Length: 273
Image (cartoon, rainbow, N blue to C red):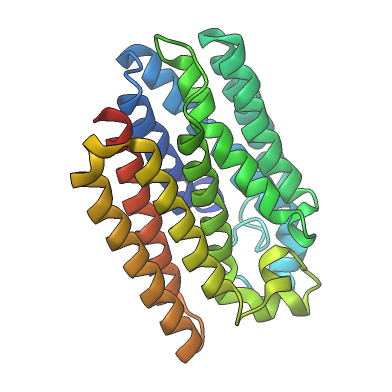
């Protein structure tokens, strides 16, 4: 039971659940048959388990140095060998399940998976960190699209909004730890922009995705997409102001995540209506 609890803690439950739910929303919105949809969602979940575990396994020395008591690998509760075995098995299962649906589902699942692993293996400390998130999240609606009955590439605006959501998540996730990251030599895109620039970048990303959503989803969806765009932008602005006025903490991050959730729901509605 201790190992199981440690594994759950190491897979980054919040982000993993959020991405899995987004995959489920996209599957419903794109009319993926329920049996296929379950396999797609499971494959995406395993993808995120693999990425989360490999991230904590690679970051264990840095987490130990920083005194991260919430990291079971760094604290010796979860053996690294177990973490790597589960991460590798989850990655393999994710791709195999996707290939069983359609070769292009497997291909884009692989792109999503490789983007996460590339980030963990070192790109997180470079200017290319944002590309990993944008590419990975942009691949998500594509793999779901090829699992649908029409088996086709989704509209440009769907991919753009998903990629923007991924990039927003990247910026929001590192916002509370910018100072610590820079001290430890992590110089990803958000760290280079800095505390003063990240909140503005989050607002800009939300506005860009909102415009793409309104234009792409069309006039018929405006009664649903327009309020969502306004709410998401408002949450992002409040989070940015809060971050600029006070020390970055949990609240700006939660507001940014709430804005991303609203946009994700609006994206699904825009596809359905």
